[in-house]
Image (cartoon, rainbow, N blue to C red; front, side, top):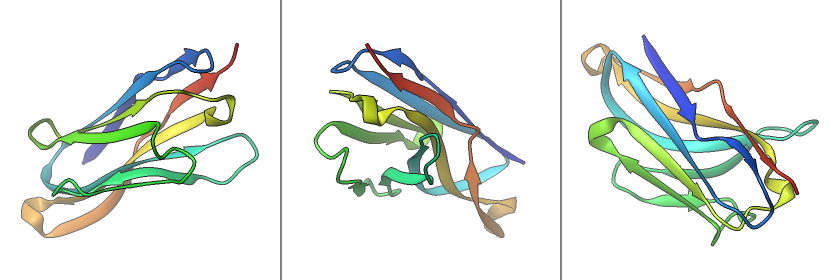
Length: 121
């Protein structure tokens, strides 16, 4: 079994910063791409940022220049540094990872339960 556990969410004022972490654990053989998605009330889940195993990154236009995704392969962890936060960044942030298990024989898409980020004065 594989688990993704996010941490680091909370309440922050506009212009502030937060750093999210997501640690993967379980019978992991290899983790490929990892990423962050978010879902605001009444809206569909949307991509925030992704990072490949080799470190290539991709960002949503709305966060480019403000958010930075990174990962520690040895710790099976992905991070999201969020700066210059805006009220429209308020959402539940979910971690996602493409992971192979069982010696590499099985590969699937895994999600964390999410962490709430609220940007408000």
